[in-house]
Length: 289
Image (tube, rainbow, N blue to C red):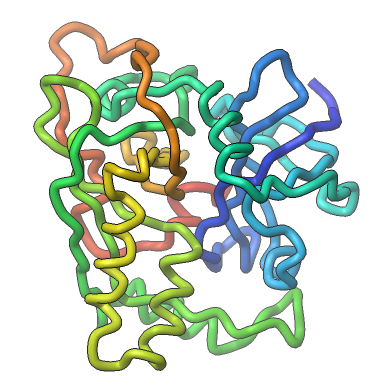
């Protein structure tokens, strides 16, 4: 498969990371609109200097050349040729956005976590049946966080003049039940750029209660009245681990699409595993090839 032209509705812009291979990068994913049906696509690497200028917001439609990744077996992963990108339009209304999201398959997180093999979806839409909690883990002083802060202090290597990257020491996580009736719960980290920006700005604007404000804001985004949907993605180096890449709204739950499960005897898991252990570089786990 060679280079092809793709039309992409950007739905995911995760927090920037500094990786060993590609430097300052951003996770960008979206819905491909040029096929017979809308489908997920992951674009990597997307450099920080392409992202920070703010010319490509969420729900913008772009056309660009892409090529299937030779080092990433996940079916949705493509290498973007960013110099070829052109802006097609912007989906401003929730109605426009929800009409596209409604055409995507929905999954249970239990199925996604239990599945094996590279053919299973690595990006997907999950409509939570019930939000049961929001947690904030403080990793101040962790070695991994210190390494990232030291790298960021050097400034951007590829975009002089770009804002200095700042990395939150907090991991913000959501507890929820997925549509599976036998679900015992999932705890997953939010890596959406917007929650990182809230931390970066609100800790100065609201120094006394910014963490409470972040919790309240994201619980509001996840309120059942908004008919929320989670944009989830797994990790190349740890494919059983899924993260929350973003949150959509006005998505009516439909019958989940089945996903091939683990071989018989495989244990059902109630967590994707991203909730344990010290905070690490999500780019290193998600995208660094």
